[in-house]
Amino acid sequence: MHIGPHHFSGRFFLAPLAGVSDRPFRAICREMGAAFTYTEMVSAHGLLHAQSQTLSYLDRDPAEVPFAVQIFAAEPEVLARGAVAAVEAGAGIVDINMACPVRKVCGTGAGAALAREPAAVEASVRAVTRAVRVPVTVKIRAGWDDATVNCVDVARAAEAGGASAVALHGRTRAQGYSGKADWSLIRAVKEAVGIPVLGSGDVWSAADALRMRRETGCDAVLVARGACGNPWIFRDLRAAEAGEEMPGHPRRDEWVETVERHVELQIEHRTRQHGGEDATTAEGHAVRELRKHLLWYTRGLQGGARFRRDATAVATAAGVEALLDRHFPPGAPFTFDPSLAAREAIAE
Ligand SMILES: Cc1cc2nc3c(=O)[nH]c(=O)nc-3n(C[C@H](O)[C@H](O)[C@H](O)COP(=O)(O)O)c2cc1C
Image (cartoon, rainbow, N blue to C red):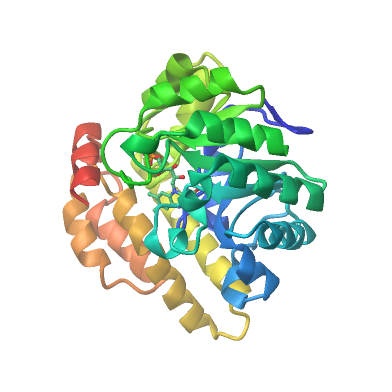
């Protein structure tokens, strides 16, 4: 699997996830076997104005190669200048977000709104490919709503503009993140373009990811909500790609080790982002930022609901460690129930 000159050792990638696919989570997923990861969506305007929050999204591990930065804006020239700034910050791939359904983003003409007109898609991609020498990819949705499903035309327009790959989330903008993703559209896009096609939508388990590949013929699969709390999905997929048995959900000690490592990485990330902060403040912010992950990690675990009640107040790494030990003591039964995990994910 290639995107431009970049070769990937696997076909299962971590999707761009705002508020989630930051450096710590990308590192954890890569360690588990994700073959490729993206930053969360980054405002091209923010990059141009060197806003500190925006620049903090560019924090990356030097080993994260190629570093893929996803940018958004409505105007082709802003996208182009944002892409140049991303490349200067180390991006080896620039992805253009044409999929975000949020009103604040679409209201400016960016995100999913940009893909309403294939001509605008082609112009945006062309502006960016002319501005940078790295591969440019796009992420799109099925269409704006059921009446305007245009992903095949949009993918063709992206290819005509010079895109090196296209990722399709098989839901419309009107669907947001609910309802079902239409995988038949991923197949339709794959049949319509010559560039690699990445499939996204309703990949909750390794079995789903494998089935998406089989049913759509996509070149790679983006794992999104299915990776939240379950980076081990990538380990299973690596094993499946090698024709080996999937190891499945980890045992207690390994699970605790990963959660604690995530806490540590988050504190380091926060410290790099906010150099002026004292250590206690940085740790407090980092642990608060991590709370959503703590909730996801404990989905499907016996005792998870009680842990989540207590975790709402945790503010230090030692506090997380103590909570893990109290609710999931070493040597005690550690039971993961995938159907409970799915029910808890839906209930959130
Ligand atoms: C919390 C959250 C944040 C997301 N942020 C982004 C983003 O920044 N850029 C993007 O292209 N897609 C984003 N997405 C969409 C995902 O990449 C993915 O396409 C979508 O969740 C469908 O996959 P799933 O049904 O397997 O979760 C986000 C989705 C969620 C749930």
